[in-house]
Length: 183
Image (tube, rainbow, N blue to C red; front, side, top):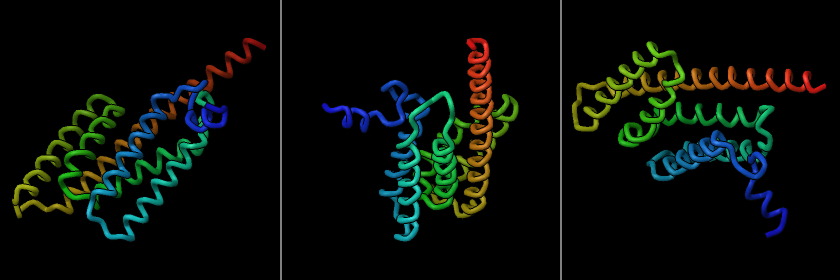
């Protein structure tokens, strides 16, 4: 294997090994690409979503250093969250209940404990309402439930981004202090 091939396989890696956040972003990107492929979407929307996936793939391709955050890497996460928000409205209910709700529930953990529990309860209600709609309950307003889900997705994305910003600021401060001490 040549050096160029090895570097091509290790893009976005720290010393040749991908970080967990980078692997998580790649997995989310691939999962969304699969959901777009198997969902019955309008061709123009499918093309739009495929272009967003390509944009995320390009942003992730050039992330090479973990200590100093690159704007393109964070752009990739922002685009993934935007894509998830749009997919809350467009995907069939079975995929929304099976994939997106679980992912949103995981990201609600970035909120403080009391708010996270309240929002998880609200998310559980949305899940039950959407499952009732799948089972044929015509009294459930699907659009209202999808809007609630999109709002929860947006809140979870904001909480995750705020947490990562705090972690990265702390990491940057520690790196600067360490450099100042060394000098």
